[in-house]
Image (cartoon, rainbow, N blue to C red; front, side, top):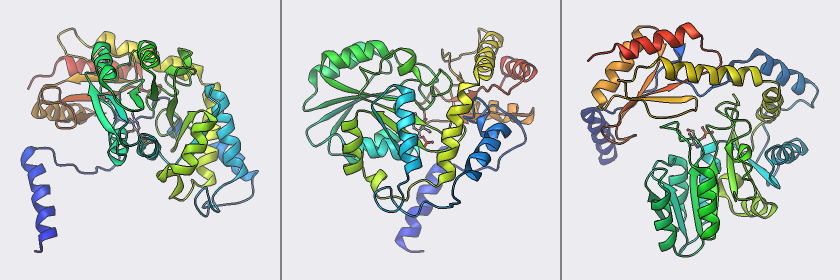
Length: 371
Ligand SMILES: Cc1ncc(COP(=O)(O)O)c(C=O)c1O
């Protein structure tokens, strides 16, 4: 075994010893309380049919053929970007191949050496990775704590950015967006909001529902969650759009999304406009689940599709998840170090397509679980 192989083996063994070794599991036939397909768009026959119809009406094309800056640009992609910008109430939008790419592309290119990026301590890994690729300083503030944020803003140097998620992916709770926007404005910081888990669940996002487009410098929209497809967009000013086209490496140095992906995004927006019944159902399910979980169970306060039951240890989170899976529910544990030790949890995702019966049984199983 050479040095590289030894390193790989030791790293994997360390994970196994710590009890956090990761493995890919095939999709199950269990009741889905795990996917980000909150509105059921990813499995929607209507969406698939509309995409097929749209594609049939277009010139046949498989791959895009290159980067957006070379052969991969299309009038279709540009029209879609204009539509996205208009829908969300921003001047411009730029498509990326995924939310990960969008965050890495934005945060690696915009903040420069001497600048400061202040993020909530629970910010998504893709934003952390983007900032790491920049030469800027990153400081975190205690989750959703406005005075901690203000303290960091007071000490910040250079151009200052504040990055938050409108709905936090691991806790499911909301950022106090209006208050954060006010603080950012007071300290001349550019506010960037990742709306991955709010898009489609709360209208077009919480920036829009709160009417904060003027106060938000940029927002990240992802299409792999409630929108049921894949890809992402950054919405902001024309100036930001042009900057990203020139400097954002995950936009420039990659093959553009195929037409199929673009049509799916376009049709998902169309479907969302006529999906108020599904959205309503989703919120009924969220309320039902919360009302059925007993007061003795520790649940992280959230009104989003992400509901977390704190188990308190990797062992208990794993045992609870396995108990629920044995009983027919696809619920996954989130373990430390992905979340802080002591907050290991079940991350339960609710959907429009779950049934009342499933939700009630799931809550009962959680309420009655003992290790
Ligand atoms: C908050 C947040 N931002 C960005 C992403 C990345 O999006 P995508 O899955 O499209 O790469 C995710 C998904 O895990 C997320 O939860």
